[in-house]
Image (cartoon, rainbow, N blue to C red; front, top):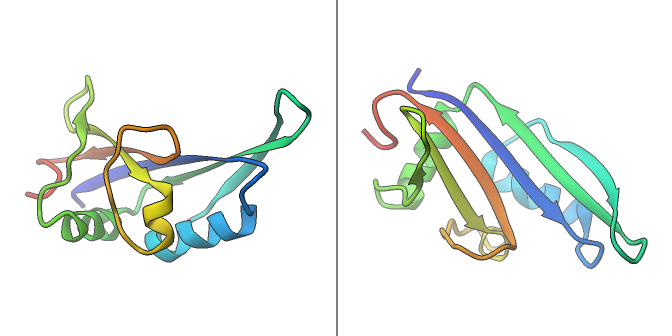
Length: 118
């Protein structure tokens, strides 16, 4: 097993459909377990934090490698084999994986052995 784990998190704002975002995540990442926590925004609006921890993740790593043509544009973390990737939430809605640096993202923390797409 090359992929040790993937931690996924996404903030879902009150203007977004919670069920639709969860559906988008499952459509791209598969039938992953998703935990949704509810927080209160500054004006009393609900803000959701959806998270997932996937430890059987070789299929997910392979999907990301294919989506990025064999070279995932992730940032290396401080630990060996640790990478961070921010995917555009809107692009995922249409089935595309696009690495971005803005705030409306699906955050991935990926721990692997022997590199991402070796």
